[in-house]
Image (cartoon, rainbow, N blue to C red):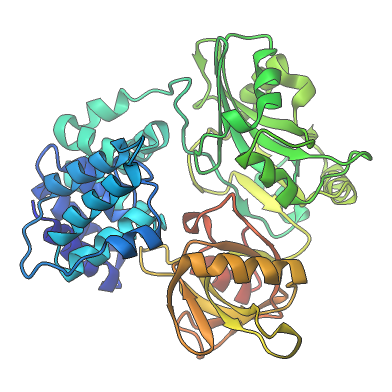
Amino acid sequence: MRLADVIETSRAVGSTPGRKAKIAAVAELIRTAGPDEIHPVVGWLSGEPRQGRIGIGWRTLAAARPEPADQTSLSVGDVDAALTGLTTISGSGSTARRRDALVSLLGAATADEQDFLVRLITGELRQGALEGVATDAIALASDVPQTVVRRAVMLSGDLGATARAAMIDGADALEAFRLTVGRPIRPMLASPGESMAAAHAQLGPDLVVEHKLDGARIQVHRDGDDVTIVTRTLRDITSSVPELVELVRALPCTLVVLDGETLALNDSGRPRPFQETMSRFGSAEGELLLRPYFFDCLHLDGVDLLDEPLERRIAALDAVAGEHRIPAIIRPSAEQAQAHFEAAIDAGHEGAMAKALDSVYAAGRRGKSWLKIKPEHTLDLVVLAAEWGYGRRTGWLSNLHLGARDPDGGPPIMVGKTFKGLTDELLRWQTEEFPRHERDRDQHTVFLHPEIVVEIELDGVQTSSRYPGGVALRFARVLRYRPDKTAADADTIDSVRELRAGGPASS
């Protein structure tokens, strides 16, 4: 299969409005791919090379980009092998050798192929917007039920590997996928809830209400003395959090997989700013100690608990890490649930979670068995551009262009602008950081590759013909940037539109 075939499908999917048509196009490409091409092809369409992050930035690629080839000649195998080669280059002289390898690859590519490869290598395609489409396309192409494919993707953490197994060996191969201690799985996410009273009425009396901490999501795996800790995006941070590793090694078990959050506290026991917690993920150094708060147990000493009801998983969690469990109350009355929510706010946390005690663990937002309730409307949006400021903000990148994720695989959809909430510290950070993500600029604006996620507080959403999604944010203001999230974690245009109807937002 040619690289050009993949690009043609990617372009067709991006320009096709209907989800069914997108799924059909991707499914046809998967059917056409050879056994060794399935994994890279599916990964590329969702922005994930088989080799993982290549670790090459825009400036390196720009310096290595030669004149494009006149005719297409690159195959999927050629590109996959070249990407593997790039990940193996290290040691003395590696910078020059990496540049030579890039020149060789890009020199064999046409202009369209160069653009695609640059976006793939730098992670611009890694929006996750196409993941749902690709998952359903795997099911269609392989004639395997969607539920089986989705579960296999959760357990493997690898869309391409799941596609290859489905196409070669079918449903039996996917049903054989098991949770493996030490191999991260994709996390279950909560849907937005309107209020604690509404959540209690929706889920019924058999629920647990937990504090929703202003921390960072972590997944912990322990096999004997071997401990692995990853973020919500499955990035390995084990070496940066030795205090968490030590704590997990001391738990009374041999094998365990835990889901939870971690954060730093001040001397009074209140959460420190989110950015201070995130700063520890890049370095083991620093005086701040992270504290874990676990809310789920997915495996304990040889027993998989994914398909067990949450109530049993909580019992396992209490048995192995009860003293580190997130503050929670089981089967509260509506009044008790509201009091627990208010206690979380008073303690400096974001809000509360309401979860059905009979819910099983499923990656992503599947149904409404987990609900998150916050006192204010917030959205996680993608920064599309920033305008140069004027007056007191002259010389700083200021007014942000904000986009919501297209759930059907298109580029983010602009829903508004704001400069409110930007402190001098954030203005300085933006002005330094945004040019590293620049894709274009004019006299007034720097346009960015859609990679940076910002949390926005707003009063609501109104119908508007000004923006392509038909809606615009009302009184939007910046709360904070979310380095723990990628564009794949941003809220969708559907979540924004729900606010117009008076429904909740996601965060």
